[in-house]
Structures are given as structure tokens and as C-alpha cells.
Picture (cartoon, rainbow, N blue to C red):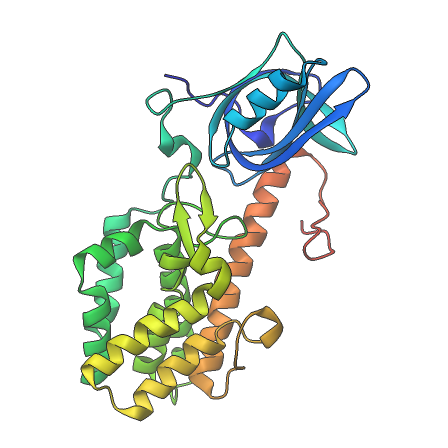
Length: 322
């Protein structure tokens, strides 16, 4: 049984590497001055990635044969050395060091997807408490139908919230959903005219399409349906079917579906509609707060593991969070 020794974020320049990783991306075999080479992008439970390069000899068939054994999502045992290239750590293997695909039973799959940050049982109770607090019977019927399915609730409670950017760990989807719910409660406390039941439905349902958009293998990745349609459309379709079966009144149906369609705020971020009433705006902003604060705090935490500098440049935002 092989276990993970060093997280990608802790790899140091010039260090000997004998560790396991998940293959995220493959790049083809190419010639170089001494033989044939290929590249991979490797990942681990942190969601971080590290470039990898195998430098083979002039036996093209042998290098190509090794390359063909490696598939996306393979768990590989890598022997080599970490080095700095273009200001980024990468791993290189030169024979007699090698790379080998591990069989099931030679590693623990749970090592490659981060564990839940909060107890999933406690979070599920919190979710059910919000559903029980809904006063509008039509809205409560919708939530009971969706989350009352034990299989659905089990998946929802253990699913990640994203591939990499935020809440990318087991239980991350439920954790994010509850954070959105709490921000909506804060909004209600400041603006009493908001409809709490509509916000509750929007907050709890807004990301359920991620159950079909993302899957967990040896890593978190997008499904074919998710790549082609996205979680907003997938979630909209799921809830629409439930509402049609319950014959939900049109005004409630339209408002909840609008919140789901507009929760990314702008069309350039994937929302077919922008928020058009206060409760939709509240859910959108709550989603932004949860996702962006999670992303920023994780970035700062990781940066402090890598440097003692007060500020670290974040490429996604073009700024230096502290």
C-alpha cells in the first residue's frame, strides 16, 4: 500500500521525489536531443497541480508504451526530482528512475480528495432545520421532495462544491450551501420585507446541479453533461421536473427558478438572467460571499505555507491578498 508523502504545495526545488499523484492531463510523446519525452499534469487532494516530464532514451516504442499505460485519473508512483522551471516547481524523471501506474488496492482513493471540513451529519441536521422552518407549504413540499430522497441527500451531503476554486473537498457543496443560507438570514435581519421562504428555497437549491456537473474518481472533475450544459441548467431542469410533478403555482415556480438561473449574477459568468427582484439579488450576493471568501482564505492559507511575504500575487484577481 502506497501513501502520499508530500503535498504538492510542499515540494521544494532540488528534492528527491518518490511519491504518488493523480494524472490530470496527458501531453503526447515528442522527440528531444537524447530520445523521447512526454509531459503530464499531476494533482493531489489539495487541488494543486504540478507539471511532470519524463525524459526517455531513444527507444521510442518503450517510451510510447509507458505513456500509453498512463490514463487520465490514473494514480501513479513517480520517481524523480523536483526542479524550478519558469519560476514554477516541476518534477522530472530520468531513467533508471521511472513512473508506474498503481492498481486498485495499492493506494487509498480518499487520499486524493480532501476530507470534509465540517461533520456531514451535523450539516445535514442544519439543512433539515432550515427546511422545517419554511412556512409556505408549497415551497416546503418542493424542498421535502428534493431533499427527502435519502439517496439524493447522501450524495448532496458528501459532494464537493467545485473542482478547484472553492469548497473543493468532500462535503464542500453542503458546506457552501449552508453558508449561502446564513448570509440570506443576515439579509433578512436587515431587510424585513424580504421573503425568507423564497430565499431559503433559492439558497438550498441553487447549486444542486453540481451533483451532475462534477464527479469524484481519484480526483474531482467535470462530467460530460456538466461540461456541455453546466450546473445552472442541470439544476434548473431537476427542480423544474419536481415542480411540474407537484403542480407548483406559477408565481412560486418562476421565482425559485429565476433565482437558480441568476445566482451567478451576470451573463458572462454563466447566468442566463441577472437578478431581477430583491430575494434573487440576496442569493446571488450570498453565493458570491461564500465562494469568494472561501477562495481568498484558502489562497492566503496556502501562500503562508510557501512564503513569509506579507502579500502574494493572485493571478485570478490581479491583486495581492494579505
